[in-house]
Image 1: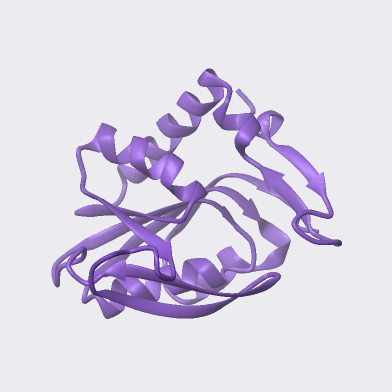
Image 2: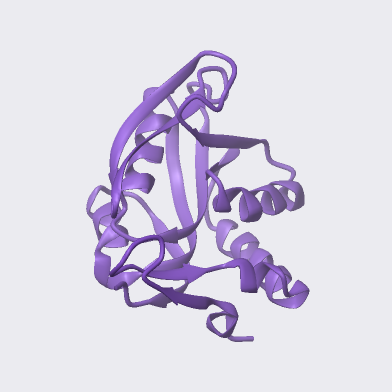
Length: 175
């Protein structure tokens, strides 16, 4: 099954000049979604990790299913002011703006190794912020797994240069 066939491309969303890769067409097809989860689970087997984290919000769709299958705790990395308890937070640049993500201070322990899952990597700002959240929580990043890599935007390459392990299921050019 070619997962690329299930990704819809929407020009000029969320703003002019952006070619948005929409995963809703993948997750609404039960076979494509199952294949995606199976591939993430299979790729994750080469890493030693204690917990799975995902970046709000589309990363939650994939990571929660993988967490269930692998029987690993699931950690939500959320947008600012969405978590009720004490948090660590990291500000970062997006491809088209600025944002902050947070994690509960009690989600990651000193010896935790975290697999971070997200739907897409573009410039890598969100992923780098996620890694910083794990690290300021005294955990370590085992690896990143993305469904889509927008290879010409450099995010995956930046993570690799930062000594992170990176996997993706499919690739598209960016803009």
